[in-house]
Amino acid sequence: MIKIAIDAMGGDFGPEPIVRGCILALKRKTFLPVLVGNKSEILSLLPKRYRDKVLIVESEDVISMSDHATDAVKRKESSIYKAVELVKNGEADGVVSAGHSGATMTLATLRLGRLKGVSRPALVTLMPTKTGRRSVVLDVGANVDSKAEHLVEFAIMGGCYAEDVLKIESPSIGLLANGEEDSKGNEVTKAAFKKLQGYKGFKGNVEGGDIFNGSCDVITCDGFVGNLVLKTSEGVASTISQLIKDYIRKSPVAITGALLMRKVFKLLKKQIDYAEIGGAPLIGIKGCVIVGHGKSNPKAIENAIYQAIAYVDTGVNKHIESRLEILKQKEV
Image 1 (cartoon, rainbow, N blue to C red):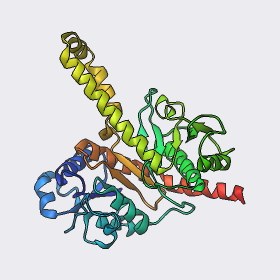
Image 2: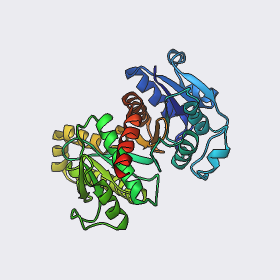
Image 3: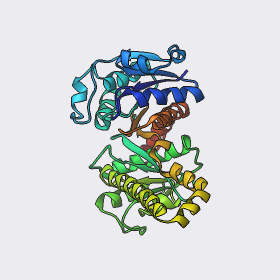
Image 4: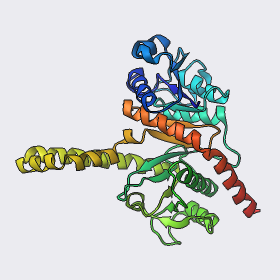
């Protein structure tokens, strides 16, 4: 049975939404959750009928959002440190945390280590597209400065993730640039372009609009650009949703139209709601780590757990190692 270590104390709202999300996941999936945190708090939130379906690991410390990411390495009693150690020691297959993302990524990289052939891990996010199928964007925040070889690794890892986890056959892979022409981009993307030429699925440069129009399955960029794309997209989605609500309230005709289009609005919300995705996998490390949003509600935690289970089930890490090995042999 797959075991998922869950940082029960991470997140902006404490253990309540995390425990509830775990219960939701248990209703639909067979797995063993290992909740890491304050045992008495966790038990107070856990219905008696679920207490024999989970393991609890006591933790006396919590890394807060105001702490430095590197502090987590020294604080061995923290919930996220203990959750990562469970994977390192083979007592869990994956980690889910909605806590300090920097601390989670730092511990995952230093304590679990990188996969063979991976210079730097990358954070993956899934973006909605007009085709209904999500696009894979990476890196969205693990690295603010990347070299060409890092972008090449991100592209290959993203392709493996799209193929194995999202079940996209022969995913198309693009480099995010300021134009589709081969001559576009900065020095780093131009160098990465040359290294990726001839790689299966590589279609060249893509623009920002390609993230959402469904023309490309995997969009590769460095973490600085990727994080700006992610935060901007979240802001646009939130603003549009609020504008629609404001306009509907002001017009009786719009209210009637909205009532008739409830199903459409429901489907739209599902497309842009981060809770429907759950979290961002940190790809390229030994094991599985899903980094959740600090404001994660129970639905988001539930979906983050599903992500972790799917990641472990597919064996994507072995696929990444083999693809990177093939690429390096070609370079030699």
